[in-house]
Length: 416
Image (cartoon, rainbow, N blue to C red):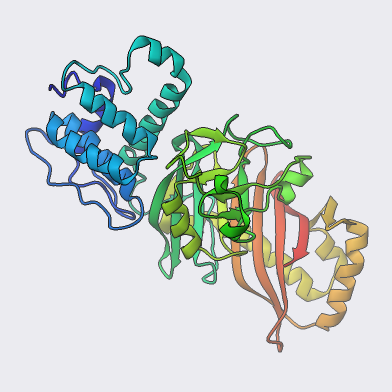
């Protein structure tokens, strides 16, 4: 069997992967330069999460190297272990066919069957391409998504979703900053992203937080190993008139190891082993989830510098509140400010009550996090503890700020 004839389009990508030293494990960054006439060492398959995808990519590599028999052996074992992994089954079928005839494309089945299952074949081919692209086009070492300007040490993990790559990235927050620890293939809404209305089958875009962990015993089998709801619609979504709800990170049904790239009613769906790892890892309420059309990766060392102009504004708000000057404080709020149904005028009474309790003491902002979301507008989602000098406790707050010309203004503030 010739690797040049087998999966022609797929083999090109597989050869690129074969030129890398190993399949990059979580947190490692693969080299992209092509190495000529050098056989790569065996693929290092992770012991736990992502193992199915790593095994599938190993099959692709063997195909790209023209090692059809080895590829078939690996594919046979994979489908025996995971009979509901449809993409692996498709590759396995092609490898069997390749023993008696040339196979020119992924899912090279007879014309009548191809026509009957055209939608399924197209979805599986797209899944294959997205998996390979996400593993081939790795983020540069030391970079993180641009939304994560500052995370409190109390936030131990963060999640970012890149819709263009059907990929979820899981980060650990350490003293040195965010570190990528795992990334997974995902499925999104049937109609794509940018959810705006109930039932539109789109996945929302924005900055969210995991709100709870649903017991899988209370869920239908359709949701797999469990579910982590997020707070869609968030404050910005509500301000923009978006409707709907019930957006979860959840698992796959028993008959599917993974779903096609665009297959959900708006949720983010992972293979069950991957979801289980996330459920075991992240913290409820505090873990941010960024869902973007395409992530922009920036140098980790420079990200705080990018956030300092806003940080200066936040501390100016704190200083104004410490001063007790109500008019100076109100200058930081938009005219259409709301807080859980309160208008700015009604919120003014709340501010007066808070100032009275402070009795002129200096305010300290503790455990500050701010995440930036930029689309038609520039928004900051800010979480912090507000503690007056001489006290050990205070309010935990979340604010939403929006850029108005050259100024940042608060359009929502509430306690957690």
